[in-house]
Amino acid sequence: MRNLNHETITEAVLESQGQTANPRMKQIMDSLVRHLHDFAREVRLTEDEWFKGIAFLTRCGHITDDKRQEFILLSDVLGLSMLTVAMNNDKPAQCTESTVFGPFHVQGAPKYELGADIANGARGIPCLVRGTVRGPDGSPVPNARMDVWQSDQDGRYDVQYADIDHAQARGVLHADAQGRYHFRSILAVPYAIPHDGPVGELLDATGRHPWRPAHLHFMIEAPGYETLITHVFRGDDAYLDSDAVFGVRQSLIADWKAQADGTYLVEYDFVLAPVAMGAM
Ligand code: BEZ
Ligand code: FE
Image (cartoon, rainbow, N blue to C red; front, side):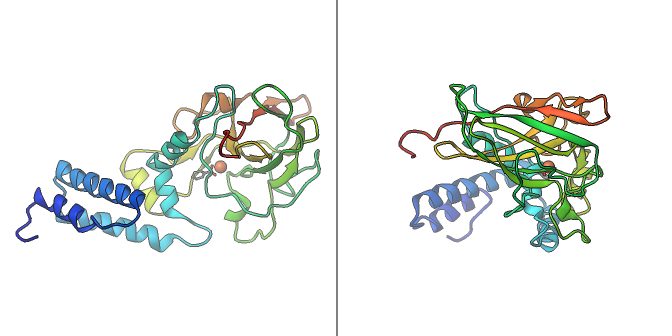
C-alpha cells in the first residue's frame, strides 16, 4: 500500500474494497474503478482537467433541485439513459419498444374520461390521438391505464413554467374494454432540453445541439403486462436522426396527419409485452 504508482494503484483500490458484502455492489464498484482508472490513463488526465471535471460535476449538483435534475440530463446526453433502457427492455419482436422516461413526468396527473381534451389550456394546434392497446397475439388489453404527457407549442412542459400551478398537456386515461383509446391534446413540436446549465455547456463544447424531435410521452400499465414507457414521435421532424438524448426508434415514429379543419390526427397502436413467466 506504499509507493503506489499509476499502474499499481488500481489493484490497491480493488483490494481495499475486497470486503464489500453485497456481491453485486462489489462487481459494480470493481468495474467502475477499473474503467475509471483506465480512462484516466488512456487520456493521461492532467490535474487541471481533473479539477475542471470536479467543477463541472459540482455545477451539476448546484443547479439540481426537485424540479431540475442535471445528473439525469447528463446521463441522457451521454447516451447512458438510453443504453440502460435498451439493455433492460428486450421484448418479443412485435411489442412496442421502450424509450427514455425523461424528467417531465409528474405523479398524480389529472384523470380524464376517454375523449377528453388533456391540453387543459396548454397552447398548441389541437390534435386527436387514438389507437388500441393489444397483446402480442393481437387480442385487446382491456382498460389499460395510460399516463400521457407532452410539451406545449413553445416546447415547454407545464412544470417548466414558474406561473403555472396546474397540469396542462398531461393526464391519465383508461382504454376501454376493447383496448381502444382516444383523447384530444395538442400537436407535439420539437424542443430543446434544458441547456442553460452545465449540460448545455457540454453540448456546446462538443458541437452538439440540445433538440429533441417532437414526441408524445406514454406510460402504459395493465395487469399481467410489463409497464411500457415510451414516446410516439412525429415522422416529419428534422431532429429524428439527431435526438439530443438518443431516444428515437423507427417503430415509434407515426404519421401525424393534418386535417382539413387545421387540426391534427395521430393514430398509434401499442402492443404490450406479457410479464415473463416466473416473474408474475
Ligand atoms: C423528455 O423527453 O421529456 C426529455 C428526455 C430527456 C431529457 C430531457 C427531456
Ligand atoms: Fe419529452
